[in-house]
Every structure is written in C-alpha cells, then in structure tokens.
Amino acid sequence: CNLSIDKTSTRIFTITTMGMFSIWDLRTFELIYTREFYKRAKMIYSFKLSNKVMIVFENEIIVLDSNPLENKFDEMSRYNLKLNTISDCKVNNNEKILGVATVSAAAPEVSLYDTEDGFILLKTLYGFKASIKYIDFSTDNYYLQ
Image (tube, rainbow, N blue to C red):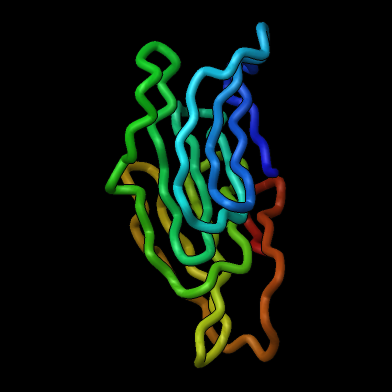
C-alpha cells in the first residue's frame, strides 16, 4: 500500500497494489471515499500546492481533483497519460515538472512534462544503456538524477 498526505495535512490518500484507492480523514480516521480501479498501482502522490492527487499505474497516470470542499474526486482528463511500462515517476519540488521513466521494447527513456494546466510533453531523453529504476529531482529543481 502506498500513501500520501494532502496539502492541509487533514486527509490520507492510499492506493493498494491491486488498485483500491481510499481517502481517510486524518483527524477522525474515518473513511471518506473509496474507488476500485481494477489495475495494478505503483504509487500515489498528493500535490502540495494544489488540490490534485496523482495515481501511477503500470502503464498509465491519472490525476484526480481532490478539492476538500466537494469530495467528488473526479478525473482531470487533461492530466491523464497512457505510456509504456512505467518504472518510476517524480514531481519536482515546485510541482511544475513531472519526470517519468519508462521501459519499452526498444530502450528506456525519461520524459518530462509541464504540470501547469495538464501534462504537456516538454522533452524525452533517450540513449540509456540500462533500465532506469528510480529518478528524482534535485532540491533546487535544476537537475534530474
């Protein structure tokens, strides 16, 4: 099970490996919402600067609107990505860039996406000689490691 805490530290978002998404009230520990995605999940990330929660599956990334005033958790279609097998993904510290490492039949690659108003491809990096298991951004947002 992966978990992430929302920007106000009032809710916990969880996703199981088998795709069960749940939201818990951190003050009362009551279950607020659940949804079964019926696909294998890799990770969950709650944006700290906006009301969005990102769920990463094996070949897809979706983002849900997590506005605490509405409790609807609708998919934000402009943020959905369908990709080759995802090995890792990270959002940089100012949450403006999403880095996604994928593996295809040809070779591993890392794609960078703008996150301001949907995921917009900025650049894809090729030429890696081995598979990529983990990526991360430096704390100053200048380097992808």
